[in-house]
Amino acid sequence: MPQIFHRSTNVLARLSIFGGLFILAFAVWALAEIHRSSWNTGTFVEREQPVQFSHKHHVGDDGIDCRYCHTTVETSNSAGMPPTKTCMNCHSQIYNDSPYLEPVRASWKNNKPIEWTRVHDLPDYVYFNHSIHVNKGVGCSTCHGRVDQMPLVYQYASLQMEWCLECHRAPERFIRPRAQVFNMAWQAENAAAENRTETQLAQGRDLVRKYNVRDKAILQSCSTCHR
Image 1 (tube, rainbow, N blue to C red):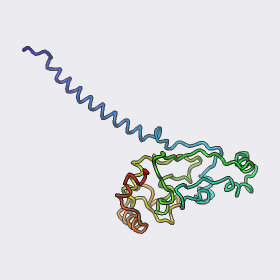
Image 2 (image 1 turned 180 degrees about the horizontal axis):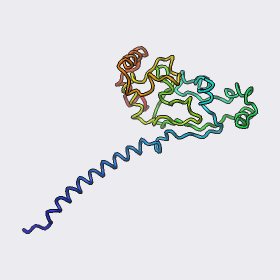
Image 3 (image 1 turned 60 degrees about the horizontal axis):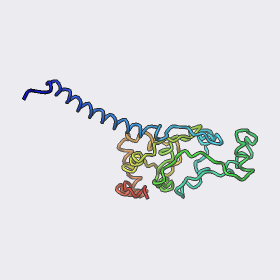
Image 4 (image 1 turned 45 degrees about the horizontal axis):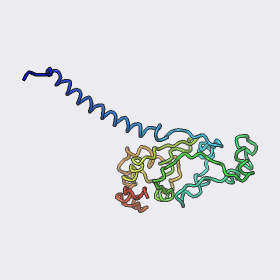
């Protein structure tokens, strides 16, 4: 039987197969990158608020502790948002006629809470407890970044499952002494975790034992976060 196709079609067929595989791999990679991008996760997008509250000014410049406003962070699953009274503790005396603070004064006079724009919003199927993490030595800046340097707060981390599991798989890389949990400038246990020295890792393992952090198998169990 005479040959129907020219021999060159064999090369074209091979190129088509390898080209298709390459395109498929590229598509998977592109989708993964889009999934992790700030366009999808909302990271590094500053959120406008009804009152342009600057954490950089209040925390970084004035040294106000996180717990002054977020009063339930050590005892509850929610860190808590400050009531208007917390703002007025200071601003009834200082900047009490500033036009920027008119929404605060109006909230105080009308007894109507300020409707803050949520920055960190986990899906409904994810359970997160602030008090557990804080009491186990996870610092605020580990999840929220250097809030003390943010004029407007933005989401520092992706909050995706792979990001959470990075800590749950190796808590010794991230846990810090409890006394340093609210220290935004704490670097040894927070920044560049992948470049730690063996001494730092040994200190982290000691803290894991000291704080009785649960077994990694439990930390990585689906039911730990999805309830």
